[in-house]
Every structure is written in structure tokens, then in C-alpha cells.
Image (cartoon, rainbow, N blue to C red; front, side, top):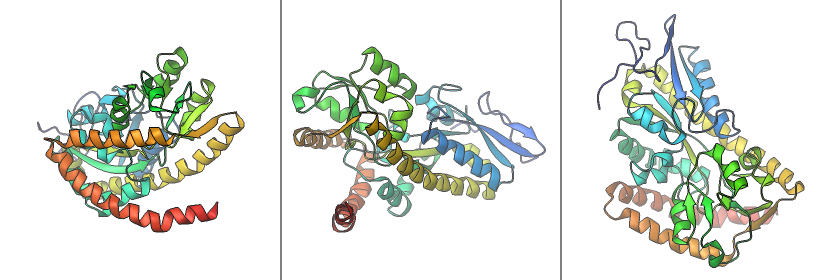
Length: 355
């Protein structure tokens, strides 16, 4: 990768690399632009990146700060990692699977169908070898990633009409991200990806028949319940979506060691708050949506079985000829098997017992 100077060598403070990453220089302080893939004022996903930026500024006593830009303000929502890789921004925020066109292995660092819960996913990254694999794959593109949060359990989708059988899915136009889209394509759905701000209008206009976004808090905030009152739970094709702070490797290398440590710590602290925010406000939003007449339903056994079978086909097809996916799966699936056994013995009986 072509080296770019993000910190002035003489003064140890930021210097402009490009228009987007140009930092403010004042009294030895560094300010970097931080584009996110989401609307910066959105609950959950927007709160997450703002929390990260605020913690870094506070812990560094203002030596390093970030100016957050929402999706589309500086770069398109799905091009944040491209901007960071190219040196047009020193750091970015979003889910890794928005850049999965570079390498499908990136899906496993956000979410995959029938995969890990948010806590399990962080456990795998932190202690199960996931972070080392993630670091290595991102180093191929000159990037340094950090986990910074998760949406927790998501909604399966808002539908304009009932879907009880696999035949009911065929021909539907559905907004859905990640490998869940590939699963639904196997089932005859026309799966499309669009930036979050476009979901409401597309569902309202009839351009799409269904939409999977996140969960009650964000779905309510984006007004999906105003279009349809039918929502299926949960999102088996995306149990919980991980969020990431991704640095340009050159920019990261030029930060002093203490600021690097502050950024990593801030990312993990923002992750903890993100888990709590989603759990707390999702519960409140679900209650409010029920009062508003939303009909929450479970997918039928036939559809769930079809999803599971389709997922088996999708992951095998993706693994062929992709060594990165093969090694991610070896690590991910090994821990997932242990996590399933633990959850079956401990978590599921506890949840069943408290109802």
C-alpha cells in the first residue's frame, strides 16, 4: 500500500492526507474525520460511533478527536472501508459485511445465518482466535479493525403479507443485507441491498414487499410499522450484527502507543454500552409496537427448515476456493459448537424457567 502521512513527523501531530482525512491542527491536537455507514443520529448504530468518538476524546484529554460524518455525508454508506483503505479517511465505522465484495470472509465478522449471539461473537473474537484472523485478513488491504458493538438479536423482517410456506416467499422483493440475502435468494426471493434511509420510502412505494433492517428500536425509529403491521421474529439469517471501527494501517501505525491503547479501549467500552442500549430500548420499542398494533409472528417450521438448508448450500459454495473463508469457518464453527452445547445446558433452560 502506498504510504500516506497522517501525522507530521516533526511535531507528532496530524497532517492532511487527502480532503476527507484532513485533520484539524491546533495546539498539538489531532482531529480526524470518521465516516460511518449509518445516519449518525440513528439510535444504536449512530450512538455507537458517537460513543466511541466521545470516549477517545475524553480519555486522551483532547489529544485525539474524531469528527463523525453520517453515511453519504462524505462517502456513500457502502464505501466507508474503501475510503479508509485508499487513505481518503484515516478511520471508518460500520459493519464489515458492507465491504464483503472485497472478500466474502468478511461476513463472519459481522454475522452469518444460524450463527453466534452477540456475546458469543465477541467471545470468539476476544478469546477464540477470531481477532487474529480478522487482523490478518484486513492487513491484506492495509486495515486495522476493532470490534465496537452489536445489534443483539434482530427482527426477521417486515412483510406486507403473510409468509407461511416456502411458496409464499417466491418472487418477493425484499431489502436484506449480508448472507441472509443469499439464503433468501435460494428460496426464490429477490433480495436487494439499499442504504437504511431508503428502506421506508421503498417499502411505502411498493418497490419492495418486505424489509429486514435491525430490530424493534431501529425499525420503529425508521417508521417501518407505519407501512405494515406484520413483523416476523427472529432474524435467524442474522442473529446479531457486529459493528467495527476500522483504521487505515498507516494512520494507525503513526499514532503513539498510548493513543492506540485508548482507541482499542474506547471501541470495547462502546461495544459494552451498545449491547446494553440495544437490549434495553429494543424491549421498550417492542412493547410500544405491540400497543401500536404490530403483529409479531414466528417463521413457520417449513420456512425455517428451508432457510437452514439454503444456508448449508450457501456456505459450502462460498468456501470453495476461498482459503480465508475456510480458516474463518474452522475457527468460528469450532467455538459455535461449544457455545451451542453450553447454551443448551445453561442459557436455554434458564430462559425457559423464568417465563
